[in-house]
Length: 249
Length: 250
Image (cartoon, rainbow over all chains, first blue to last red; front, side):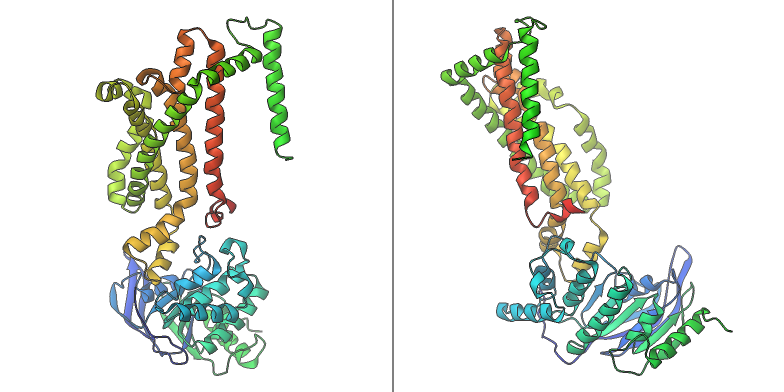
């Protein structure tokens, strides 16, 4: 059991990749990635499929150790997966409660839980089990669980890509609202260009394997953003261009 | 109620066919007792108190043998499931014993434990321990790795990892495994009691055979079947627990 302090408005998590390279059995997956993520920043990694995005996240979470280079994370790291990351034998409240394990005071824990359930609009589902919820609801529970308690850094591995388009749009909005109330440092991996442009403070475009960062792009606009906002369209165009997907007429 | 009716109907038809087979002389009376004779035999056995005594004796033997097997097999399966090296070392031996009919142990059971409860405990243990270890072990080995990654994120380690992640993750399969192996135990007890005991349901059937009292044998068979079903119904109730429903609904 770990003891930590509750974080409300300040964030401390920072993240540094210094000349990180990785590969499996002679196949180089990550060439040389340098990346510094500031506390409270939302960085989106976008790239072609099979470009080693997940490998990069595994390096960040400490699940893998890089062949060369160093990974430094400051703060408690938690990951949101594409799907099925909730424990099916625990209710919604119990799953979110996992994130509150570091909170020693019981009353405080209960209050936190209530606030989080309200934030994701699932108050009425606190005693439901994951298999009784829709895909979107389950991902909302995952979001509540990772921001619960004293997490600092959130890694998101295509968290919305298993959802239908409309649910996905809503989930992006919810994530924005959640981060406003509970700021965290976020590294978000996706293949969805629009998603990158809607959510990111900074977008990093990755190349085909062996992966490196080919373009860095800041999006200066407050969240929530619409897919149709000018900054978003502008950023999407730049990303498409970089990936060689923009059609020139 | 509606769910019971078809089953009841089949039962009545089967009973009727049995009665008809006896009535028409298709089976001679010495080869197949009629429903009426069995009913009379039931009365007799109850009055003598032998049937109840035999039921209690059998239940006790299955309970002890099965309880010890489960008590050892579940922790062992949980442990083996998480250790690939030990697992691959022990797997051939576990499989060997699983396919060895428990009845093959009868000579040793009697030599080592003589006559009474003990050889029955031993045979029940030998017949249920190995399949149960294998069930739990393979259930643990196939837990999606994502659960362990999540557990790592939320600082579950050691004992907590075992009791709050590994165990609940295999519980639905464990319950199914317990139902299946209990079925094996109940089948084996009859054979075990035919040779190693002086009472019990299996011994009752053996006695009936020796006395050419087939009506009594059928009466014992009915009791064995009904108790087996009854206990399975009780074990089935565990699948209705709210924290294992997920395992049966996807």
